[in-house]
Length: 84
Image (cartoon, rainbow, N blue to C red; front, side, top):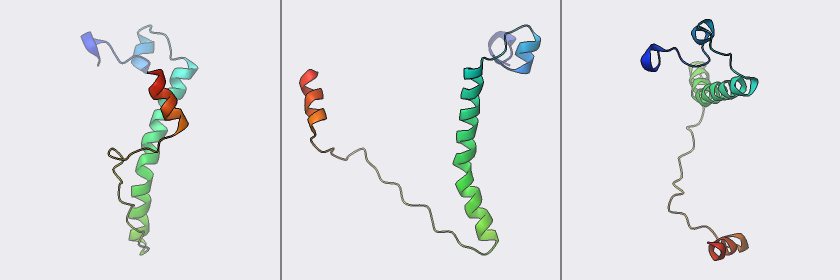
């Protein structure tokens, strides 16, 4: 339940209590979010399934920290600095 005892907006309970159904863009947004979560989990599951079958999948690539990376000086970055 949400705030003050109300059901989540767009849920079946919400619609039963007289709330409007979700619009098509809202439904597609929820579907896209769900698909992203499922796809994010697929790699680990596939690696696990392959290893159970005796096929060892390589380890995932190491993460690269780009927070300290220096970007090349491009015309677009110079224009942006000048405009600011």
